[in-house]
Image 1 (tube, helix red, strand yellow):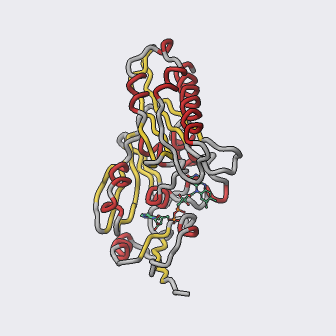
Image 2 (spheres, rainbow, N blue to C red; image 1 turned 180 degrees about the vertical axis):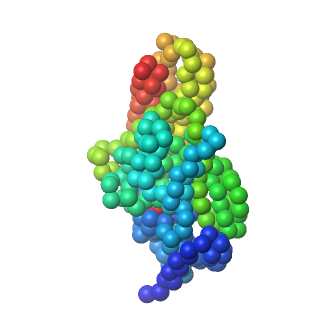
Image 3 (cartoon, rainbow, N blue to C red; image 1 turned 90 degrees about the vertical axis):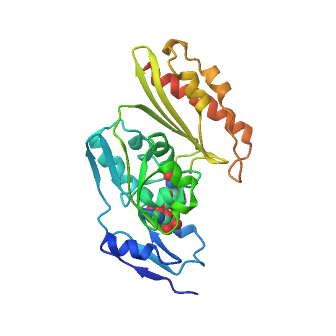
Length: 269
Ligand SMILES: Cc1cc2nc3c(=O)[nH]c(=O)nc-3n(C[C@H](O)[C@H](O)[C@H](O)COP(=O)(O)OP(=O)(O)OC[C@H]3O[C@@H](n4cnc5c(N)ncnc54)[C@H](O)[C@@H]3O)c2cc1C
């Protein structure tokens, strides 16, 4: 068996050099790498000694270091805003030992179909900070879609506006220990008796994620009393596929029903 070279950089400058070497990849929590074929990997960059485990909230921006675990994020953001969408997404993700290991950086880089993190980051229009071959802040959506951005680049942080959203997260699971088949993230701004703005992201579709713009348009400036779950259901037309999906049509109908339910709950409370 091939021997893997482990690197333990203590500075971002060292990590930046290492990440640009061929076949040398970052190691966050290791929960995804553990399940991956590492035949093409010559070395790992273990990130735990880097100063990447922090949350900063200043000037209306929240910045989260990429080595924050799901558990870290949930507990730190709870102090800033207990109703924050990331608290809702992450506090019940996977299980306690995994939440203590899974990192924000590794989860953005890997973006599994069952990700509890990515729907919220996409809905928040978050940006990643990269060092290495690519340097600077880039929208998470671009990072997901553009493989050039992911090449030989280390995510150091993710940041987004600290805006006042009503929020909800729904995971489609059979039992608490399941990875979700899909999950829904909803952000709403409600003013007086109308929805002023909404952002709705489904994770787990064939294109990994889908922004439900038809439902966002339906909600736009609509009076709360006029929002009907059955009308929302009709606007949901999602494509699901893969070994974890037995019946794509069932998953689509279920997503529509759950979305209608949570939106009505959000606007009427
Ligand atoms: C049994 C099980 C159940 C799970 N259930 C869920 C669930 O329900 N919901 C959920 O959201 N997640 C879940 N996960 C976690 C998810 O599947 C991934 O394993 C996890 O998101 C990867 O994060 P990590 O920090 O462990 O990354 P790693 O395993 O360390 O890395 C994953 C990938 O990202 C790269 N990488 C790591 N850090 C960085 C960085 N800073 N910059 C650039 N690239 C980087 C690595 O090189 C690798 O390619 C589960 C995992 C397991 C094992």
